[in-house]
Image 1 (cartoon, rainbow, N blue to C red):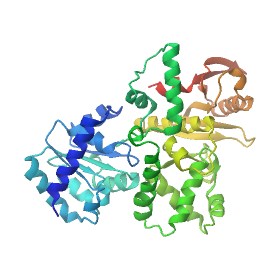
Image 2: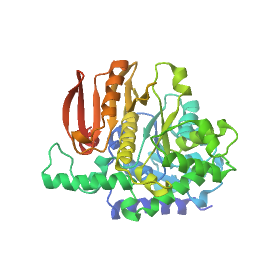
Image 3: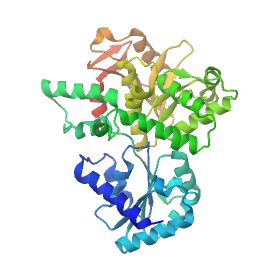
Image 4: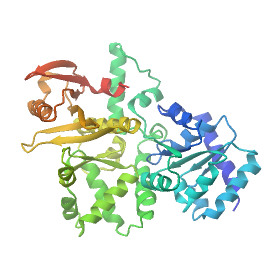
Length: 421
């Protein structure tokens, strides 16, 4: 196999992307680059096509580096003994390299041993579209010797940057109208970097690649139709409570454990993420229904069946994504939803350590008359039960502070909340 030819072509492709397309510096770029000052492996994980390849290339581009992407049909079936030949090809092409980028390395069985050896003399960047495969295998072989950065599709702040809009504290009426229009677009098309280049059609391709390459082939799923039906069902019904037993019945799957395993595969590929119902009792958390959210609003609109466009639900999914993004940069936080026996419910609960720090409702409201009384009552009840005073309602365009039964509630427009650092 002519590794040098493949390596040169792949690098040229990245250089062409950088020179011909609008590239922005991602919010986690400086943090990621700083980790390579120390003898660590930098692991960049995230959903397929969220920008991991160009992100890793930009980190190393001013250094002498070798790059190879294993998600290439010419490298299909490659064995671990070929990795030394690839390293030799790097030396022949670029001389004494300092950085090595191994893109989608999880496709090679036994790669972690090669990476462990390589990190002793090189700065190593690894990317992958599977959370468990990377963190699990690295944790086994490289305890304390790697740093994990999770990359997502564009945040709304990054989405504005790509549209050449600067984020600031105050906007004119005209500027605000433009940004609200972009926010409405972001809620519908999501944040995949290539959406501006290829349009909505690329979302279906990304979804199909995840279902085939990252799930069905990787986990050797025989019932491919059934797992696709499960994925469509939970994405269509994001933010609703689900139980594994109910899903098994709906999809005519005999074993509840199969549903549990399949959902874990969807999570590990970063397609969805799950929220537990909060309880101070771990057993209650385990047995309670879960809520599923999709990693990108564009995928929801592209593949969900019979999805009637509801801006309120899309707002909720966007808030869930942003909370998940903030959690990734602050591992001390935990995200849940809350519901009591009277069926009062709070969309999001943010916990630090043993303390509930914030309670958040999301509603598509323009003014106070559109705020549902039950949403306020739910916040009050949760506040009293959980001893939490930081209460928020994220709205479309209503901003205020008000007292309800002695509790201060902040009403925050989604635009302002998403741009808050």
